[in-house]
Image (cartoon, rainbow, N blue to C red):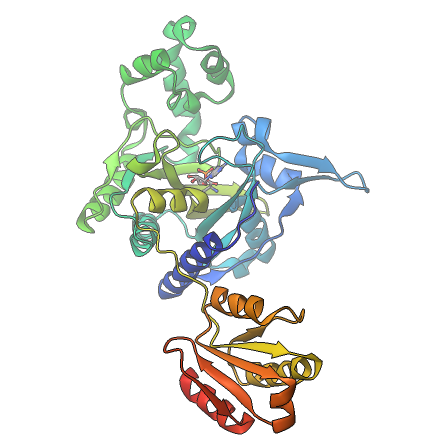
Length: 408
Ligand code: HAM
C-alpha cells in the first residue's frame, strides 16, 4: 500500500479529471459505495471458488460479530446498491474511482491497495451495449495518451448454458487429468473454466488442443458474440478473439474482455470487463462493466513517456513578512485575496527573508509581496514580479486591482 504524493498526485488528479469529463459525455453518473461491505456481498457475486474470495480478501468481524470485507473490486458494491433500488435501477449508468484491496503477493504492478476506475451499466443482454462499454474504455485509454492497447475478447456463453459448457469441458479434460497441474486438477471439480487460463505451459498445451469454448455454446450465444466483434471491428477497435480468456470472477457470462498494454510486461492487464448477471435482490441484475487499474495505467504512461507531469497550479502571489505587524497585515490581505479567488500563500513562521523567498520560488509564485514593519507604518507594500525581477512600491488598493487583473 503506497502513499501518493506530489508530484505524482498531480498525474492522478489529471487522469481522474479526464475520466470524469469523458464519463459525462457518455451519460454516466458517479457512485461512491462504502469501502467496507458485508462479506457475503462479495462471496455471493464474485464466487466462492475464485482466487479473490479464497485468498485475497481482507475480512474481519466487527464488534457485533458481523463479517465485513474491504472491497476487493467495485462491481459487487454497485450491484448491491442497485439491487436496493429495485425497479428504480432502470438503465443506470454509473462510474466509480477509488481504492480496492486484495491481499496479494506484492510485485511490480500488483498492490494490496490499488485504485480502479470503472463503470457499470444496467442492461439486459445487448451486443450494442457491450460494444459501447468497450468503446468507452478504449476511448478513455486514448484520452489518457495510451495508444497501442490490445483488446482481447471472448465469450462465456449465456448463464443458462454454463452447466452444459462445464460438462463438455469436463468430458474433454478428464482423459488428461493426470497431466494437468495440481491447481487445475482441483479446478476441474470446483471452477472448471479457470483451467482455460492457467499459466502453466502443460495445461496450456492441453487446452489449446481442445475446441474453443464457443463450440459448446448455442447458436444464439455465438451470434451474440459475433455481433459484438463485428460492431467493434466497425468502430476500428480491432478485437483479438482469445479463446482461453475467461476472467477470474464467477459473475460473468456472454462477453468478457481484457485490455493489455505491451509496455507492462508480465502484469500486462491494464483493465478487464464483461457482462454479468448477479443476484442480490429478488431478481438477478444484468449488466456490463469494466475496471481499469490506475497504478497500471500510470505505469504504462510512464513506460511510453506519455506521462505529463502537470505541476499543481502555481500560486499567483506569495507574501513575505518581516516582523510581527507585517505578518498580521499580510495574513489579513492574503485571506482577502483568496476570498476573491486568488491563489496565494505565505510562510507564517517568521523565518529569514532568504528562506521566505526560497519558499516563494518553490511555490512557483509569479509575484511576491514583501512587507516589513516600515511598509506597515507607511501603508505601502513592495511588489516584486518574479519573472522580470522588477520591484515597485504599491498601495494596498492598487495591488489588489493589479493582482485581480493578472488573475483574469
Ligand atoms: P479485475 O480484472 O479483477 O476486474 O480488475 C480490474 C483491473 O484492476 C485489472 O485489470 C488490474 O489493472 C487492476 N488490478 C487488479 N488487482 C490489482 C492489484 N492487486 N494491484 C494493482 N492493480 C490491480 C474487476 O475487478 C471487475 N470488477 C471488473 C468489472 C467491472 N467487470 C464488470 N464490471
